[in-house]
Length: 167
Image (cartoon, rainbow, N blue to C red):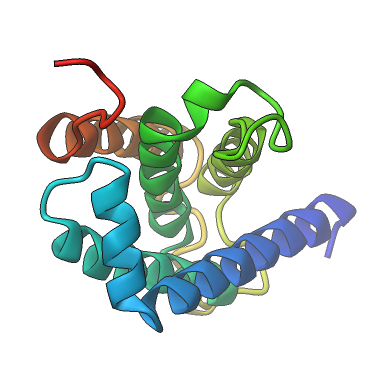
């Protein structure tokens, strides 16, 4: 493997580990996750908790094993857009700036996911084993990321109301 392939594979696997851990953490306490979504202004908080947990686990597994990698990486952008739009943008850039944390972390994950979505799973992936490693890479990967960003904003428009906004 070339050095770039090794580093992209490492990035893909690490993003998979992070998302899988988040999904498991959210899923093992669904009522707590539901309460958090409700507190942050999300309607259908139970549905949000279930879909968030299941989605993060699916994204994590896809990235970890490099299966439908560009799709999984683009899907990671959805919760990052939602987290940015509903929580982190109000706290400024730095993660340590305020109790809700700034947006540097979610932006970094979204940018890293964009890199993986455009680069694909690499030679050590289920995609490569199935001959799919180049199917959605490059501009199609960029298109998937753009679509994921739109889906994240649509989720906010449909399900989120700023609890701090004055009526």
